[in-house]
Image 1 (cartoon, chains in turn cyan, brown):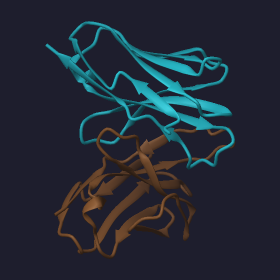
Image 2 (cartoon, one colour):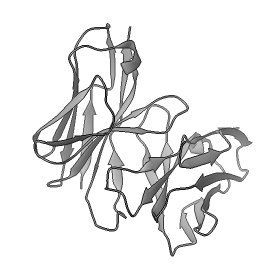
Image 3 (cartoon, one colour):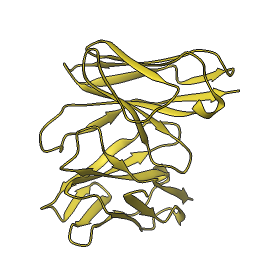
Length: 114
Length: 115
């Protein structure tokens, strides 16, 4: 069973609107959580990384939150733009794992329409 | 600044043919290197990782192999491709730190179609 579950699987939003993506994980012990943006046919690019003690982190119009108690994270996109159309991937690292064993979510496909 | 190059970007190969995907990193020394495969609707699957020249760890049994002939070069190979090898392959690198808070940098990916 995947230890990182993302929802929704996909969503369509109008340009200028806000949206929130969810990530639930069971990875333990927890080390950090990252959000990546992946444009179609390209490699993922990091948006944010949060450790256990961080609740919120922003990167421009992207704001990530983390609740380590409930093992949930969200990525909020404000005032969406057409360039935000991409897959957003949640990645969780366990402090007990070797560096190579990151747990990847399947991603949320976001489509921003004019 | 560091950059990662991966090629070819797209590849169409017949079943049973060999494969070679190459990845190089510039601007850093002794990086950790990774090969991932991404299937549609699935999370990235780690195939191989390397912490140094000639040091390769495999995560899943498969039809593929990896080699690291130089510090910043990582090669993914197969002697005979299967239909199931089709997918999007991503090379990545990182600088290790004990807290696992370092960044993972991905290449642009290689789309492999096996016919």
